[in-house]
Length: 84
Ligand SMILES: [Zn+2]
Image (cartoon, rainbow, N blue to C red; front, side, top):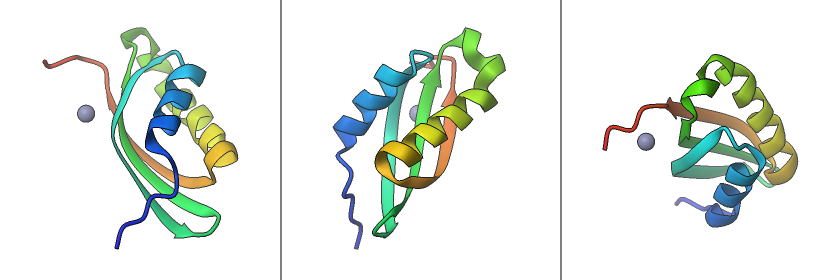
């Protein structure tokens, strides 16, 4: 059974507010592994001019999510071209 103790709209709003280089975050899935350890997968659309700093951006997002939401592991799929 899948449980998500973290409020997804709150998490999305937090990421968009804290990281202006992230234009959108979607397909977010969170698994609670233990009481203080969560895993997250998500797609993030980032500003094209931020692509060169993508690795550093992800490190900052990871640190932020760990501190704020007890998310100890993430897996992001980056997107920087709108195909729609
Ligand atoms: Zn996507």
